[in-house]
Amino acid sequence: MIQKTETKIGDLDCVLVKSEACQTPTSAVIFCHGFGAPGTDLVSLADVMIEMGTAQQNAVYVFPAAPIELDPLFDSRAWWMIDIEKIQNLMMNGKTREMQDESPDLLPQRRTDLTYVIDHCRHEYSLPASKIVVGGFSQGSMLATDVALHYPEALGGLIVWSGALINSDQWTLQAERQSPLKITQSHGTIDPILPIDGARDLKDMLESHHHQIEYIEFHGPHSIPMNAVKLAGQLIGNVVND
Image (cartoon, rainbow, N blue to C red; front, side, top):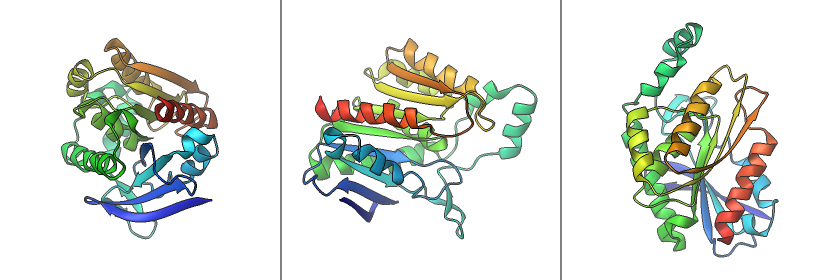
């Protein structure tokens, strides 16, 4: 059986998922949804992870909802606002790499919010940083990347589904300072929302600063294929067992 609980951690509404057999979690996995999605968008992935094996069953899965409400009818949310028209113009003109210099005004506040969730999990379950995994999809993966690079200790893992390089100068500086991170990353080669170049540049930047990346490209759009989910599950299993 799987237990799902709604709670508030700091300023963020969260869903917590764990196996009923897991009395004391030995790891915490925090997933952030993408722009325009409901706060519960990725919750079903916990079921998939838990079914992967005993190690994955020993983790608690935390799904925070972004605080910006775009459409209350559909629970459409965002971590920060984006200029969709500007992005479309950059894509039409083949200048998507200009997006890498973007540093959203709300990014520092969202970093604080997610860091609080990490620290809460560490305190609640007596976990070291090495037992925390952060990740997400699209905008949520960008937030997870930002937090992992800025966290004062190396986290156990980072999962990047359809993410991209932003805040380039600061991320590059933090990637150099941060201890080696274990990362899984995936991206579709025909992604019409975040072109593949941003993912490849993120991978290259992180690898150039000693971080360990297992990277998947797939022929598909802005999505999470099952092989990327399985790769993330393997990372989680390794973090639990280390």
